[in-house]
Image (tube, rainbow, N blue to C red):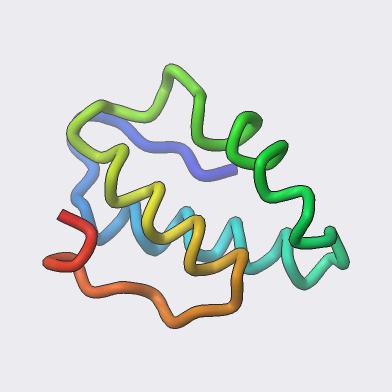
Length: 75
């Protein structure tokens, strides 16, 4: 699980959510399920608002097989 807290950095958020999404993709979940996975993993109340955009960018990249984005790109 990608646990974040208010002391987490953007880099930590991106690393955790990229790894989570990559693991989900490698498990064989079809890309058509991305919308469902976004609801499950990204619409959680435990992601601090200041880190959401970083977690989102990394999750989408990880699940679609793209390289992890630079922090500046996610900001």
